Amino acid sequence: MNNQKIFSVSELTSAIKSLLEGRFPFINVVGEISNLRRPGSGHLYFTLKDGRAQIKTVLFKMQQRYLEKQPRDGQMVVCRGRISVYEPRGDYQLIVDALEFHGAGTLQLAFEQLKAKLAAEGLFEQADKKELPPLPRHITLVTSPTGAAVHDFIRIAQRRYPQVRISVYPVAVQGDTAAGEIREAIVDINSQMDTDIIVLCRGGGSIEDLWAFNDEQLAGTIHGSTIPVVSAVGHEIDFTIADFAADLRAPTPSGAAEMLLPDSSILADRIAELARRLRHTMQSRMDRYQDQLALYRQQLGGATHPLDTLMLHLDHLAGNMEHAMQNLLTTRQARLNELDSRLQQKNPLQVLLLFQHNILGLERRLQQAGKRVIRENEQTLARAAGLLDAVSPLSTLARGYAIARKKSGRKKIITTVDQVCNGEKIEIILHQGRLDCSVLSTSKQSD
Image (cartoon, rainbow, N blue to C red):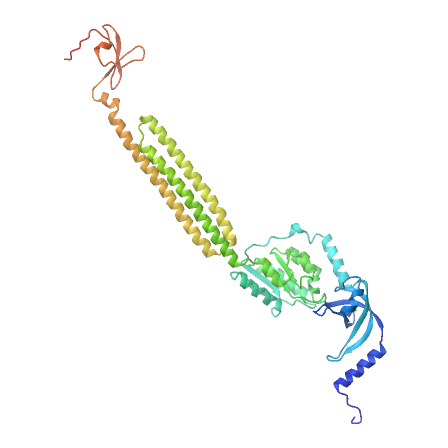
């Protein structure tokens, strides 16, 4: 033991490097691309794998000019290059000089086949997608509670719309049990939780990392959910079967928060503008109707028509007034209902309730003003009726007086004896009834 050479780490790594590079100076390796990434240097780093093993691989930027197209995860390729050891980390890797595309990888091919099958079964139909509420009260995240994705979603959601309630349903998002746990979570939330939206939340990763979201049974569970399901899995370039089955696909978990929740500051500005326009519109119309009421009051106050004409005119004015006020109230109520619906969708509850209270107060004042004007007009009519009654000829007849008039022609009222002659037929109008008489004699002297 003591006679054996003792290697330092550097010496051993260097010896292994010389052995590998000498044994495999140039080789061809076929496999599937996974975990492809391109850092700022422009080099491509990925894992080349098959069903039982994998090897780290690098394709330097200068060698990429020979590529017929850009590689991506899941593709089968043939890499021509050499084996080397990166001594600082002790990793052995394949340095690629040339890369040829060799068809789709096993997982990518399985993904495309399942996608085509479920599409043919109608699982991805746009007509079946459920509508998402514009202002969700409660969002449930189906995710790993320790991942960065859930914290990104919550941080952005609280910044944009702090009124929303967020629950986390913990599940595994990677591994053999992940798909089953996610399915059970969706079923459990549908049966037991009062929530507006379910969000499947996971950060980026390789096709293997995201494979739980390519489960056929999970796609059926998402499609059958009565609660809208949003898929926020991976990065923007990552696609899973869950993305196509969900009611909405978000590019990232943080992007889902941006898409599902409004900016509360913009919402508050919009509400304030709607309230200002509502107050201005109501004040303008109230001023116009006040002017109309004043005109009606002036016309009624100066009425000199006979009683029947005056009453018809008053009925006409009252009908017009009631019709105008009813139209105003109907229009205002319809407008208020419309604004109430819009504010219910876009306005925090406290601000909405305040404006509803103000609107009801203005409506009561308007109704009270209308009733007051009608009451004043009725009093004016009563005074005019009393005046007409006082000067009416009918009142004079009731006190014992009579009216004599000719029977022929225009039945002119007789005020002097010169208007009649002896033997002429005349009629006498009494308070109750009429007398037909003949003039026997006339005299200009009164007894």
